[in-house]
Length: 449
Image (cartoon, rainbow, N blue to C red; front, side, top):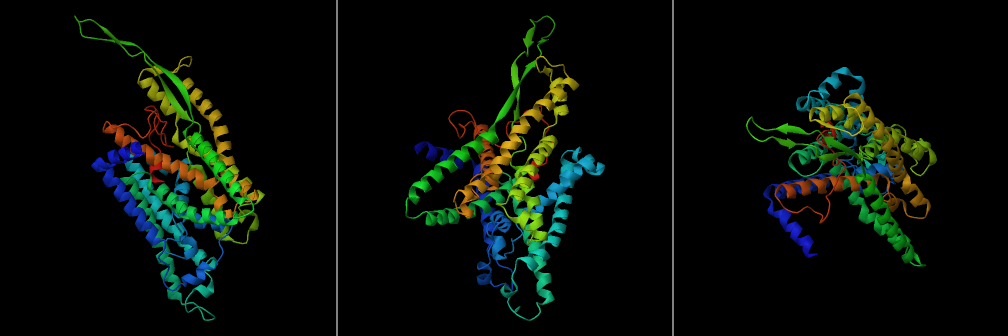
């Protein structure tokens, strides 16, 4: 406990880090307050009686309960995630976007601007659907049997769009001025907001008849799954590299040999991190928003929903790995620095070697990611209440683990840069963005997501 208190004091003693943490917490508080501000003209008490099961429960979980309350933040941050998916897919097929991606920081800013505009367009499509499908007529004050005023529809759609854009702005400010990845943190906060209530529901369901023992076993199992998730996020495959020796020194002076040191390139087993889960989940929301009665793809405990969900996670893992890790760029950087992989020719052979190895380790990583993602279904079938089962692996746990590790990694970087010890006595915290290398391309877009 003393070590923990000392570490907190060290973190608080760094002015820049302290200001970033305070700003992050302040913006999170604003986001949470916004999720409780109900749309004008909507009866909050009636909204509380509406059930949000299945895929609707997932949407509500991601928005921190704002979806079920018909609040200004009801659409959450998911339209921005959907827009980011579209832009990254377009980066493969559209030459103009490919050119922006190769322009460095200026290109990234242009892509972010297009993403923001696309987010507004997605919100404009989703907002009327949300008001029609998920806000009961009896919850609209003055609705009843009378026609709902057109002005209410217009103002509600504008407010929902404004709420999503404001949440997007908060996330970007956290990324730029705070600590951690802002968009991911807002999603994580929405998930954490539902954890206490879910745990209380599970306790209530297990009261009496030996239920306490089952509850303890469930907690132990949850800890085990969490550890496995951490191992998946932090697992790496190290490729040894050798630096060539060179002779340096001026004429008349004794020459000195530099280089020759052995190092390695850490390739992550799950280089895509938690993004395939977020991407796949965002697309799984579409059937519910388009047609809530499509039972096969809105039942989160059904076979076809989970089969499609797992398949999309595997596909997105390969896709996101391909756009974040560039074997050719790594090979060029190795060659430029005078380094090489023992037994592999520099240049094209090195790029092929890294690409093949990356494909091999991504397969088990993507399958493991998919299995963890659908694990809550098995927890639910085992008798755990739906709300609490969502935290047994699945999107919830993987996002919590990935985002927490990323945030802790940034805090540790601040500590180490000020010559403090890291957060761990041995080793270091590795988030989903860690495990990279100087030879790895830095041109990915994860900071905007």
